[in-house]
View 1: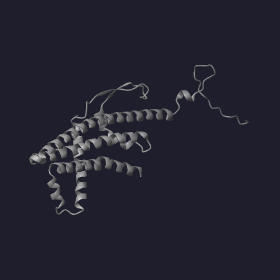
View 2: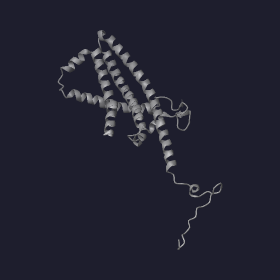
View 3: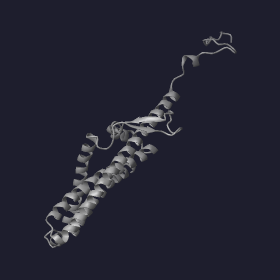
View 4: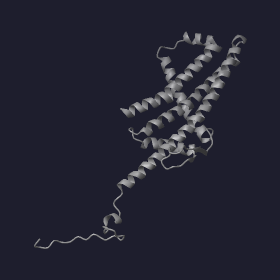
Length: 244
């Protein structure tokens, strides 16, 4: 049930919400720049089931374009520097480091491997899923703004003088939203890199502690020491005498 709930949250954040943003922005462009377009579509031959189908198609297409955009942004290193020195407050890192050299792109390469290894009862999984979902939501929203920007620009270019001014204003608003979303995507990618680094560090620390706890006793633990002596004395097993 928990796994199904997690999948549902991922689909909602990565597909449904960005798709709704795309629909809203496209509808807003048509409403502001060319209201007659909506009137002609409303009186068209489309059935009642066609509109949900179009909505789902837009959602899935937004997700698909978001995957391609993610590949371009990450592959082209457009989401920030490859090496990001970060100061860690004293007492936060379990190994005592106060300056780490974060490589967010390397951390991102192992994202899905780490997600698959984490258990549902680990707090780290919730933090990592939240940071990852926020990044993908912002990344897919870039597709929504880009698609609406192209659509609005085409409508503005062919609009009459009465609606062209509003179209230019709407296009400018979409450009501003696109720039803000891109900046947020860079921030969320950096935060996700921090969470990935912390999750890996915690797993390494926990694994080291488990190995230390589960390790077999050493030779020094299997020998006896005389009181006040420094040299270990091997323990000897004696066979009881027949008359004992």
